[in-house]
Image 1 (tube, rainbow, N blue to C red):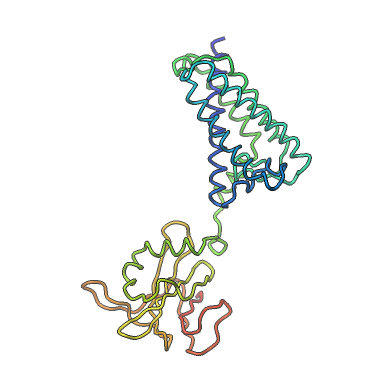
Image 2 (cartoon, rainbow, N blue to C red; image 1 turned 180 degrees about the vertical axis):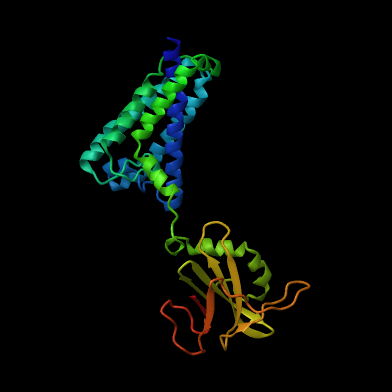
Amino acid sequence: MLVLEAMREVQIPLVAAILLVGCVTKLARTLRTGSADSGLGPTALFPMSTRRPVAVILCAIEGGLGLGLIITAGGLGGLPAATCVRLGAGLLFLVATSTLIELRTVRPDVGCGCFGDFSTAPVSGRTIARSALLAVAALSTIDLGAVSAAQVGRAGIELLVFLGAELLVIGALSPEVGEGLIRLGYSEPCELRDVPSLRTLAALRRSKQWRRYSGLITSDVPSDVWRELCWRYVVYPSSYQERPADLVFAVFLQHRRPTIHAALVDAGTGLSLPCPAAPGGESRPAPPVPGQVPLRLPAGTAAGPTGARADLPVYTDL
């Protein structure tokens, strides 16, 4: 009897963790895509105009119930509050189970959206069974009192074995586990990496290269921006020794702390100019991008296929 009681009590943190993870992953997808209803399967059952509010409400309910289960588990708010939260969690999973069955019938191509980007696979029997299992787990805790670590700890090894078995069952019913393992072993090629231009400009303005050469720049707006494979090139009108010049930054396309190189180019001839010396140092030629060599196009020639200006240095792979 003691083990059975502990088994019911451990369902509270388990269900709370799943609700909070679901809420956080939905928020992460919303921040990435800029759309609250993007990728959330159940919203496909609603009219287009109501999908965003439904998605926001669903995420808020998940987060609220997850936090409520944790807050009321120790007796805070009394038994009525704990019972209401646990009943709400059970009803949420019951409604989710019914919704997934309907979604599988009406839109078999849509994922459940339970865990944001990880839930893109079409709804299957495993997904429905997982939701039903969590509904039973949540409803089994309704008449429990306050939960304490000491009470759960008395169950010993039997509880750990049961909890491990339950986690294995939930994992087996979760298509997201396979998706997560695939993503862990997959490295997206930099040529296909999607890094917005605004993010590149923000990283550039925070860089050491920008602080070193920004005194040469004569305009707050770049005159040209283009991408070649793994690099984005940003050109600013500049002035060097009273001569018009172009300051070219090469920013490697990665989301955090990208590698940045700078080259100073004469605006009239397209030839590289010596980089201004750091305090106490000497001027030096502009460094090429590692693994690439600069090909300077004669002034007045047509732009290349990438759309780069003819009077700027174009980098090509060795």
